[in-house]
Image 1 (cartoon, rainbow, N blue to C red):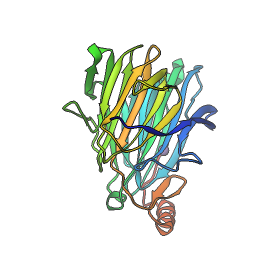
Image 2 (tube, helix red, strand yellow):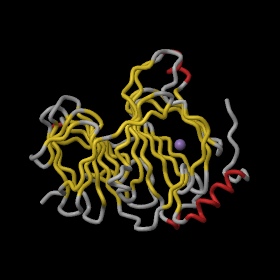
Image 3 (cartoon, rainbow, N blue to C red):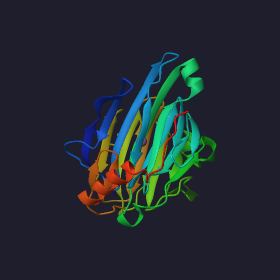
Image 4 (cartoon, rainbow, N blue to C red):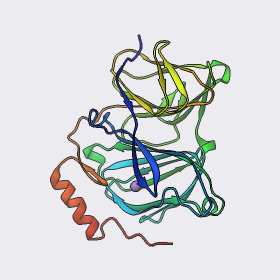
Length: 289
Ligand code: MN
């Protein structure tokens, strides 16, 4: 018995990152969240001329959740009000805990600006429960080669265990609640069975290519499937060469969600507090390069 899809969402396009098309399959009018996953942005793939920053996201605050960046291609520099600086390259993941508050920027790296190239990635917002919304901010800079890989179907299907656990491999990222985040690469025809705990809410996002789900219907890239919590997991078969799928599942937090811009809290009062704390400098200060 397999998890069955309850929603099939085609990513809508936004234009809010330096003119780069950003696709947003979550949230939508139909699906507010797949608790604990709040938002999914897919930027690129886009070919960028030298001297152009396809991201150019200047300093802005966050509180109450974890913004996670999966970079497929390109190079991004990160800087925040906690003194963290980082450089992400293709295959790297940045798992940030905004917690009580952080101010950060995300821009193309200096070498990318100089040389241009392809930029392609995903940003995911993972909610935090009330008990951890005001946690100390944290920044996990996860290099590609530190992410465990589980090979299936004679190596034609590869699952990178970013968070959670799969096939006895523990994910590279620490999380506050049980979350599985797997990056699946499928050759054409390759088959992967992925177990999902019944207690988890689950979704997949097809980053590129196309897949057949549970040996049944096929789905194209830039679609998000939300699943019903019943069964042992899902089965995916690659229907085109170099298919990439982001597989996400997590134990639902089950608390009220109040979001305003970059803050995700439980109540309107807490949102007001976040705005005030940011104004008062309680999320630290960000200095430009
Ligand atoms: Mn941000």
